[in-house]
Amino acid sequence: MTKTIDMSGQPCPMPVIAAKKALKEAPSGEQVKIVVDNDIARQNLEKMAQGLGLAFASKSLDGGLAEVTVTAGQPQCEPMVEGRGLVVAVGRETLGDGRDDKLGHALMKAFIQSLTELDVPPEYVFFFNGGAFLTTEGSACLEDLAKLADKGSVITTCGACLNFYQLTDKLKIGAPTNMLSIVSTMAQAAKVINI
Image (tube, rainbow, N blue to C red):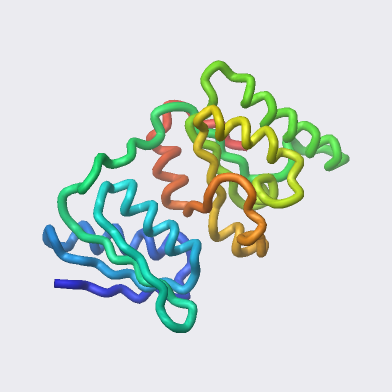
């Protein structure tokens, strides 16, 4: 049996929320198909399925649509455990408020560079709103973010923010995510730094 949900035109994280609800209500073995109209939504649905340990597949449809099929039931693999350590959430390009953004940009670069010097790096570093510019082409923080990734930090950027600022094709480090994933991880974190 298969259930299809058309989420084309729906903003992030609505497709993920609808999919999770449908999967909770679906009997084991039922396939839930979610139709979306952008690649960020497709990636977020795949990450959701992977995070829940459920089998999934995706394919492109006509008209720029994509379909992600997730099978409800027992996890097919070990679900990912989120949020056990430090989570850093960055919602702006500059650090602090002042009279000159040049200082704010320098402070943000110094902050991210300092994260690489921690004995135990953050488990997750999320970027949203203006923070999305820090993970994209032209950012002065890319080298330090790459060091964080090499040390095991998961770096993700809000997909809706990338779309809003037309930065989707300019993402240079990490992967897109959705607000539901950000909030869920922050809620489970041992400690959160929100800037």
